[in-house]
Amino acid sequence: MTRPASRLAPAAALALLAIVATGCRKAAPSPPDAGPVASLNARCERRDPSACDTLGDRYERGADVPQDDARAAALYRRACDGGFAGGCTHLGWLHESGRGVGRDLAAAATLYRRACDARHLRGCTNLGWLLENGTGVTADLPAAIALYRRACEGDEGVACGNLGRLHAEGQGVARDLTQARTFLTRSCDHGAWGSCTRLGWMYESGEGVAVDAAQAAVRYRRACDEGEARGCVNLGWLYQNGAGVPGDATRARVLYERSCAQGNALGCSNLATLYEQGIGVTVDLPRAAATYERACEAGNHPACTTLSTMLQEAEG
Image 1 (cartoon, rainbow, N blue to C red):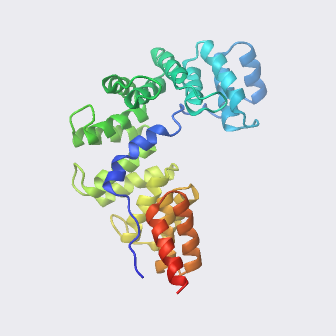
Image 2 (cartoon, rainbow, N blue to C red):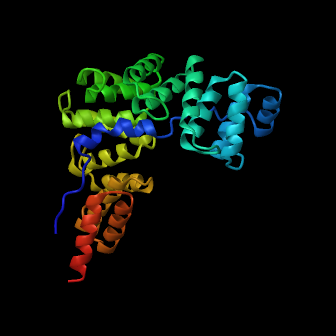
Image 3 (cartoon, rainbow, N blue to C red):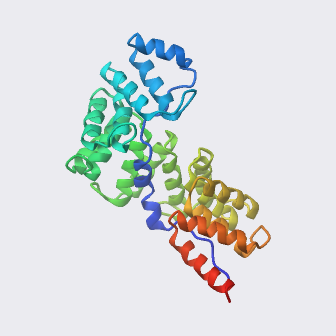
């Protein structure tokens, strides 16, 4: 039985930036050399709001301290009330995600607006996302776009990516793939790694640009190197098929393994296909079935179908 490996469909690619935007939208963590915990705590007690924010980030991530979202929320509140706008954004994210505090979307919107008004651009982006989707606030796409533009002009990568997504889909703005590519490139260059994946798909599929698998590989590799699982899946596909890069089934397997380990359902499904069909590996049907099961549990419905067929065939 021969089945082609699964592939990111164009419709799914268009949704990438929406998915990225709903991921952790907290601002970048504070630099690791911001000071030992005792020093940060002392500075926070001396009413240094930036130290409270940095210490909150450490508790949120469990970096050199026990992970404690409630403690992080309290520290972010002190930072925010002390005039450090990043603390407002970070506390807003905890309210939005319901971590350490009760989930309260209206409170999140208020905190994001407070941060944005104080020129913390990730706060503007996050408020824009709530307005775009009518989450905790009345939906207002023009206001969301204005906030994304404000943040993107300050090189806030996620905001630029959201503008790229909207231009690609023609939502709230005229559909313009050239503009989409411009915004996605800016987004990728400022650390929104999902935008690198989305940009790679434009080059691979010829969406608003000449097909260029080599350029796609560059974008996917950049995303993958930064831990963006979809970039690893798509780069693996290029290696498996020798598109834009030399064909290398072993490299494809490594990339699928990396994405699967991150919980990416498509990466697990593609890895299972390699073991089922013996592509770059010895055929291993039990391992293929186990990996299809993992993909199925992560939400890849074709993997569920394939697993069911394999089990039926095994039973004769």
